[in-house]
Image 1 (cartoon, rainbow, N blue to C red):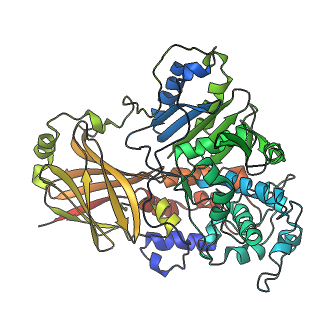
Image 2: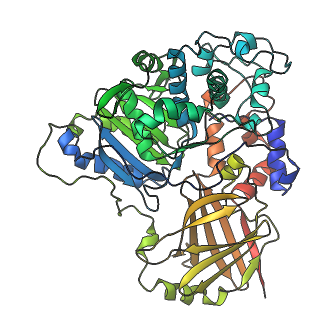
Image 3: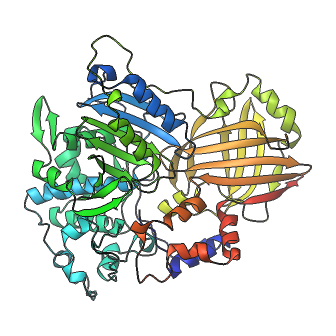
Length: 579
């Protein structure tokens, strides 16, 4: 995911801080508003890892390392060996029946669609994009635009300036792309940009006469029994291509196994070549040499690692790691601070695959399989509460229950800003909150946008989260919410509340501290956007020349701007009791 900041985006941030978001022309496209549960059935055989020559204890150690790291915020982990499932974990409160946003991981799926279409003679990699979208309603092509080929889109070497941030302010993404400037940034010309993938999706639609989803369902998904996948669309009704896809952990593993099988899949007891073997080989070859940390280079929308493996990668920890030498596929979903494949998650996967002691001769005795299990050890500490949790809440905070606390300044939101931007469901900020018990259920009542949200909080041992649906501006979000009594550095009691968006990269964390008739509220979303933006400002892959205001300049501005950003991204405010 590339992120650049021009004057429009600076204006967006300033207006958001001032609560004037309604003044901005923001377009996100057509997303799936209702919740669609993931298909829990699977045709993948489950087997003990030791029987496949992979150490069960080594897998458990790897999972524990990932699950215990708060900066990784793991939600799901799965592994296949020789085409069979040997591990499938979901960290509480995540479960098998929830899909997960893939971010850029789905770029590799678009590459698959292009490979199928090329094999069918519907397109050629040397074809000029301008010949497919001729003039596009009379748009004047900038210098260099006529030279961009489909292969340039696949290898991220188009160097087109129009990117994801620009798409938020634009209705017709094809027109904006074709009229964009070209900014060459390096000898290789590599410039990571999701709009390249979007244009590939537009090519598929143009040449097949079908939506990307319909084309893939017919050619790929139905054969592989990949069901209930969703893919958000642009304002003009084309799949976003480089992001917007939700699929299950098992779906991700299958798509990795497909390439490990050189594009072949078992259909009704017979092997069927779903993707041409030549395309699999070509798309996993190095077309752009990068040489940074564990990243060797880039193929056709596929990352190539220095250990010889390849990767489908999405920001914040969405990964499908394929190691041909070991015959394994590993998938992760997370809400981490990993931006590109040189993050901690992928390094740990590579280290696991590199260790010979993790791969032993196959054992045939019956050892328990880890399929579908949830390790309790590294769950959130919410589950450590005593059976008398309700009394504990009342003891410390009983005087404050049932009282509404109102805020005169921006107090954060129940919905992470990152999710607000993805779906254009912008919030004006929390205006008031109230805590209270009813029939032994702890409620967190939040007023935002003039709407009262009654969120039930898990707080008991064995019920640390309560699953529910949150309806925000016509979109359904499955969430899990919980609360715990904690203490600050001065040993004063406080309440910690977590709202976890189960299909998204987004966790809202609230700290409530009561002082007399006042409530001090600290709101933070994870991953923290301020930290993420700082990391992005240092990423060479997303820097472009000739941009009006690069992202790094946000962090070189006067302290006042940083203060304003902090006030929005990590607000600490005081509310007054409305008695």
